[in-house]
Length: 482
Image (cartoon, rainbow, N blue to C red; front, top):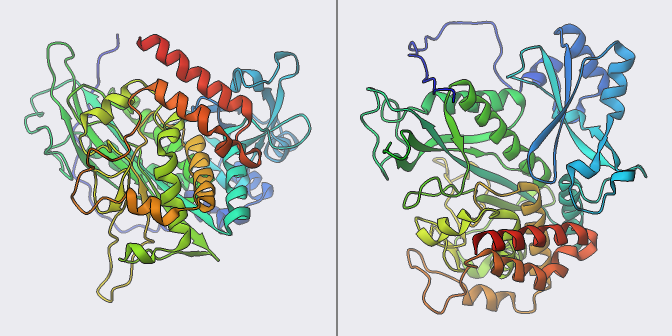
């Protein structure tokens, strides 16, 4: 086994005057001179020509939630234009296993989305990467694709509510390495917002923030978290917890951003000879790894204000909260996909254990956090509704599609205000014995999805065979844990 390679000592950074422009943060936006929404194939071809790009990588998200890639070394400009404008075929039966795509007719097409292009910061050769959607042989978006499912969910939400939904994920992770003499400060539950030398992962985290910004993946901030696991005889490795919080984006972009953040963090850990873990629980008894999502309803291109009075919440916020508390347990099928997900929840280290919602309460399933204001009282970012149930095993595309469907279902509930009143948790108050509890095992999640699958199949957003496959996986996990 290859031994860990700790970060080499870093010299203090020095500020020097430079002619290089660093804003906007996205490198391609600086080079092309216009926003990503306006990029064209011709713009990307010019980049390839001017910056000596040798490889084009078509990236996409498979049914398992992992980032995939298909690489090209363009032969000439005609070949390059074909790649960027039309994409290429792939084997759908291997990418979306057991979802009804027959091996005998499994060709699908990867279609690049021009506005997602970035230079691969880890490639040995100059490489232009670009995210893709999936299309079937009929030329239509592939129903089984997570990207398609999420985009259909967004369309359904817009049609039924007149609103859009923005989101950003809190990407928590544990970074592990072999201890050395410098590692003398770490302590469990004391790592929150710690800085070097009290944490060893600060440099890696800051590099991740910089690389994501250069790639055009917007972030809000990064910091160290509470979790710390000292080395012991069973595993001679220290683990410390960090977080990179993304910025609000429309749901499809928000899901892609989480996937790309995982990719960047894993690559950096690999290069530094460290271990990266997004497992719900790295070690029993210690803080778990959440993937909280902050959600902001948008109407008429304006993020809605939530105010301080629960009785005066906008209708869209009520629909979202009611949908999340009503169907939160079902959403675990997409947001809590490992057996250790239930261990994280049972440990109750700031993880929700019952279906409650409220302002500020970190033990609630859904909460409305405060937002910083400037001296004039202006909010510096939109107010959000935080869904705190999911963890590092989540499939972000399927989870966000499920959340969109839950919001639509919340609008159709006949007693929204009653649901909100019954599930409200006052600030700092834990859920009582009478509260609706969160499922405690995969069998309960599978049963909930069977009962409520019509909510997710509405308007054809989740294909029946994708839900069948999800239930099959849950049932298999149940068998393995018996």
